[in-house]
Structure formats: C-alpha cells, structure tokens
Picture 1 (tube, helix red, strand yellow):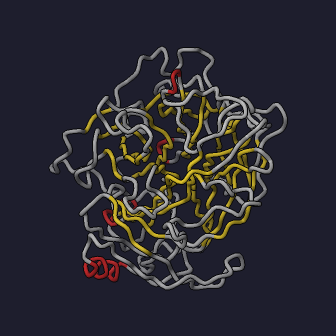
Picture 2 (cartoon, helix red, strand yellow):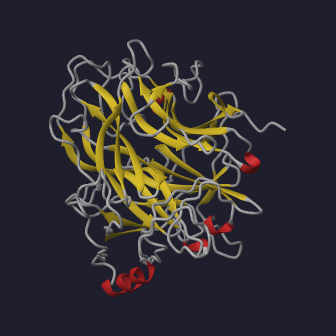
Picture 3 (cartoon, one colour):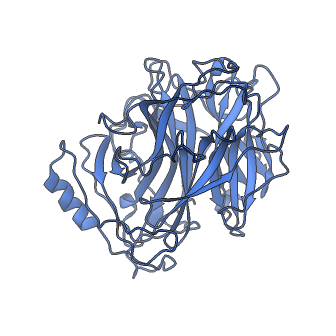
Amino acid sequence: MEVAAASGIMAAVNFLHTSPTTKLTVSTTLSTPCPWLSQKPNTLTPCAPSSVPRTNFLSVLSRCSTKPDTDTNNETDQNPTLQHNSNSKTSSNYPSQPNSNEAISSSLSESPPPPPSISRGLVFDLGLTNSWDSAEIGSPVVKRFLSDDEERWYMWYNGSSSENPCSDLVGLGISSNGIHWERGNGPVRSSADVGLVMNCSQDWWAFDTSNIRPGEVVIMSSAKVRASNAVYWLYYTGYSSENVNFSDDDSSEFDLKNPERFHIYNLSGENGSTGKILKSLPGLAISQDGRYWARIEGEHHSGALFDVGSDKDWDSLFISSPQVVFHGNGDLRMFYHSFDVENGEFGIGIARSRDGIKWLKLGKIMGGGIKGSFDEFGVKNPCVVRNKKDGKYVMVYEGVGVDGKTSIGLAMSTDGLKDWRRFQDKAVLETESEDGSWDNKGLGSPCLVQMDGDGGDEWRLYYRGIGNGGRTGIGLAVSEGSDITSLRRWTGFHL
C-alpha cells in the first residue's frame, strides 16, 4: 500500500463541508535543527476564510494539532503522531469508502469500454458528453489501499469539459482492482461520492485561478486515529492567468505551452513560434476523505508553496508537476519540472522539506538526454517511488524528443537526490505504431505503483495517452514480474 507521511504535523482535520474547497494558512515549528533548512518557520496559525465562521475552524484545528515527534518507526499505540508505513495492510490506514446505505450521486457511472482493436492499455476514457471531464483528462495520481478483506484504488486526475476546455479541474475515480473505474459526471455530493472534487480558486490574487492539476497525494495516518480520519495531502500545480513571455527561435520543432492542450492545439507546432505559457506554481490542499479539500496557503503572496527562480535560474518560467516522496523522519523530497531557457530543454529539479509546507530548492537534477535520444529535448512530469525491497529510488518521467514526441523514461538512484542514472538512454514505453491506436501520438504524466500482497511483485504504470485529434485517455502498462524495465500495455487479466 502506498502511504506517505511527515512526522508530527497533525493527526486529523475535521472539515466543515460547506464547499469542496476552502482555504487555510498553516505552517509548523521544526522540532530539531536541519542542515539544509536555514530559516525557522512560524508556529501553527490557522486562518479561516470569511465564508466559514472563524471560531468553528479554530475549535476544530485546536483539537487536531499534535506535538512534533521524531520517531516515525514506532508503530505502537503509544505514538499518536503521524506515521509513514508503506507496507501496512491494516484498516487504520484504509480510507473512507462508500456505504451501501448512503446515497450516491445519480451522476455515478462506470467508464465505458472502448473498442478492443484500438484500446490496448486504455483503462480510463473521456467522460460522457455533458460531464465535467468530457474534453480532456490526464495527470493520474493512483493509490492502492489494502484491508483485511478487500482492496480499493483511488485515482485523482485532471479534466476539462467541452463547455470550458481551457480550465482544468481535479476529480476522483475509485476501483476495486485498478482496472475498472467508477466516476462521476459532476461534483461530489457526499464523502462516499466520486466525480469533481476540486475547483480553481476564486481569489483574484491566487496562483491557481485558471487551472489545477494533481501532482501527488500523500496520506497521513496514526495508530490512534480512526480510519475515517486519515488526512490526505494533495500537492498540485496551479496556473494563473499571468502570461510568461518566451520566444524560442530554433531549439524545438513545436510550440512550447504551459499547460499543454492536446484537443485544441495542433501537435506539430511551428518553428520560431511564441508559446502561450501561463505561470504555474506548486500548491497544497488537505482533506479528510479525499473529496472535500481545504487549501493550505504557502509563504508566497499568491498562496503557493514557493516561487519560480530568478531570471538566471533554470526554473525561472514556471514550476509544474510537484511530486512528493517521504524519505525519512523530517525529510520530504519534492520533484518538479520546468523549462531551462539557458539550455533550451525541460528539466527536473528537487526541493526538500521537514514539514511538507516550507520547502528549500536544491537545484536541477536531470536535463535532456544524449543527441538523438527519445528525451533529447528534456524531461518532465516525474514520478518517484522508493522500492520497498531494496530501498532504492525509481523515477519514471515523460521524455521529450526534438520533434515534440513524448515517451516514458526510467531512471534510478540510490539516495533519491542527485545521483540519477537513466536506463540505457531508451524509453521503457513508447507510442503505439498503429495509426488508429488511442495513444499513437504521445505518452506522458506517468504514475508508478508497486504491487505487494496478493498483487504479486509487479509494477503498474498509469499514464496519459494522446491519440488522433489530440484525444486523451489514461492507460496502464504492467511489468513482467518485478522487472520494471519490461513494461507492456495491459491487455486483460491472465488466470
């Protein structure tokens, strides 16, 4: 089971379900000094939005705050603080699930199966015509939870509607096997519902007023917290309406955009064109059930966790696709991507934090591949997983060729910091060669899940696929046993 936590931040948050997204200001005090974090954060200061009575939020949060603890390996009932346990199969880390007696939204539907001749690997297609995710979907964040008697899969993803195709929102789908998914056509109506779960901010000054896309969901848990009180931390990319001026004369054969739009723009692009780049920054929201979210305002004036770099820095244009990994006590790593103007390539960088809120950037860790490689023009949308067997780090990422074609690459590291080595400079998953295939134009936004328990030793790779006309979907590739380099598109269960 994929469960990640920072030690001693809060045990649970009981949200007032007045709206799918509210806003809080939270920072925490560090309990021990940290050599790579020079400034001390402020103490915990909740700030309720004007639409919700301040006294209610203060009384709720005051009951949920816990004293920071430095022991994350203690799994006994004597430790009430948040814990990280990637191998736990107990119900204490199992999220809330639909109750057979609870009303489910009438918009609930199962993703319709596409024609088998062109759908190899496709497990999640576009929504119905009038649904919130009918125009485009992507950025899958998939988590698998195990209890004593069943398993449950959650997938957060971004989507846009045909009525508003240039505004991405965040939704949730659920599954019992990670293959067949239930989804909702509209906003969730209860803590057991599925569908649209997070909208763009309505605050004019915020960094996420135009689009939002999920990057990672980290789950906090405690031995003394009931299963229904697990706290989800959603790291996401927020886009504002601020345009970033950038003109590329000769380094690429396609139009650089942020965010990318596949169903609207021509994939081929034009040389020397000026890309429409919206400034994007990393954000954080927390939830008790994975459906109703409260934004956490970071130190940046827009509410983001941190800002882009200076004009001379490699990440001066935008920050995108934050993905967070728990390394150890008081050590969280965030991987993200930007476009390195000086070197003319996409790159992946890393930031570090003790509390998951205040971050210190450590710099760029990966750039473009060798000449002629599938990722010569750069790397983006990283997903990093710590191997449960040997403790090493595995990164899957979206590699960009000089012609704009995107494929899935693989890199490994022993420490998860800067010692990243590509796998033979070859893609581990490429586009289908058949013209009619649903993902024959590009692959990206990978999400890696390591199976355990009854799932065997295989790896599952979820990804966004692009087909003819820019049509998008979410696909699945599975490894042959524990060999992550042998990924093949899912074609069905083998008995």
